[in-house]
Image (tube, rainbow, N blue to C red; front, side, top):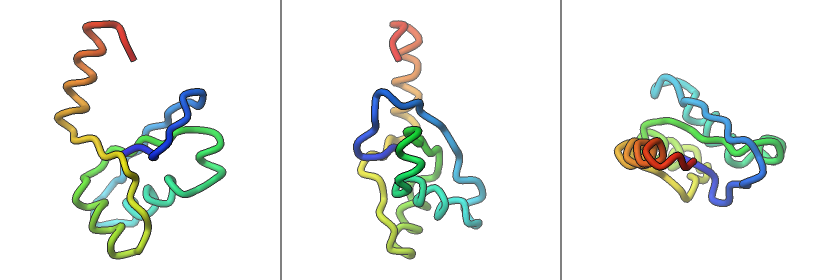
Length: 86
């Protein structure tokens, strides 16, 4: 998951949501709304998308517009390795 308007000039910082039964998913949802975080980096969260959707619904926190399935992430990563793109 990435913010709806990532900034190309900021570094991308990847985090995981941790244990799906813990507070990690809620903290990750907060990353996408935190102005201070978004002013210094573009957060990239590796997580279970259905868990994040459920937590967003339960807490009323917005879910980022962009959710990339793991299979697509792998496909794009492999393609970028072959072409030398980012």
